[in-house]
Amino acid sequence: MIDIHCHILPGIDDGAQTIHDTLDMAKAAAGQGIHQIVATPHHRNGHYDNTKPDILKYTSILNDKLAEEDIPLSILPGQETRLHGDMVEGLEQGDILPINHTTKYVFVEFPSGHIPRYAKQLLFDIQLKGYMPVIVHPERNKEIMDNPDKLYQIVEKGVLSQVTAASVCGKFGKKIQKFSHQLIEAGLTHFIASDAHNTTTRGFYLKDAYDELHKTHGNDTFYLFRENPDLMIDGKMVNHLPPERVKKKSFLGLF
Image 1: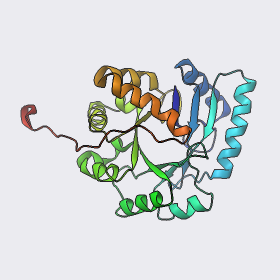
Image 2 (image 1 turned 90 degrees about the horizontal axis):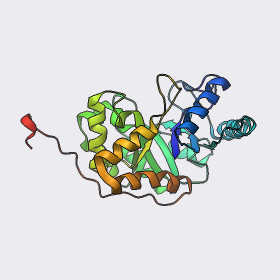
Image 3 (image 1 turned 135 degrees about the vertical axis):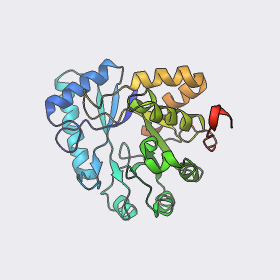
Image 4 (image 1 turned 120 degrees about the vertical axis):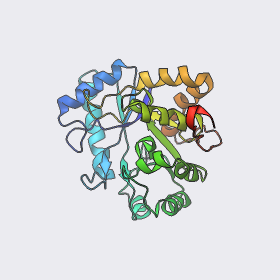
């Protein structure tokens, strides 16, 4: 398995704090069958400012350490960037790091409570520059949960999204779990990733999430989601279904 969203680089954001934390995470990931992880430290979220050159350096150092420790895992460079008005300039100037640094895929994080008013225009501008925005953990955004059409309007324009493994298998509660499955069913999300920060409170759960996906949505959806991370890190077009609006059920489950 490939995990495309993980805070495994030590001491640079709210993920692993020490190299010992990182090695514990690496061993846990390998134990789940994960063989590649995209390290995605926070950037421009008000607390952390991890830029492309630093992430490339830290990723190289960590890969050397994993080889030294004989842990069967490789780390690819990535970044989780909070949406901000200078994103196009950040991409052009080499401050913002696309996934695996040679692809067109760019992780974009919304504030947890809302979608900025300028989001649709900025996401369009990023696409015009040849990049593919990927909205991370939309299932935990309050405005999207209250009005899923907001995500539909974005995905309909070609933007992708990624839900969190812990959300899919119920670790953030039944409401977020149900909404995650609604997004999958409606074709409004395209990847599952761990967003792991540690081995205790924010673990991987990636194998559990794929098992849940297979059980709930069947073979076709399972293999689509399993293949998409490989396609992403190779810079290829990912699989996706035509997006649909989330069907909200009324009282007693009647539409």
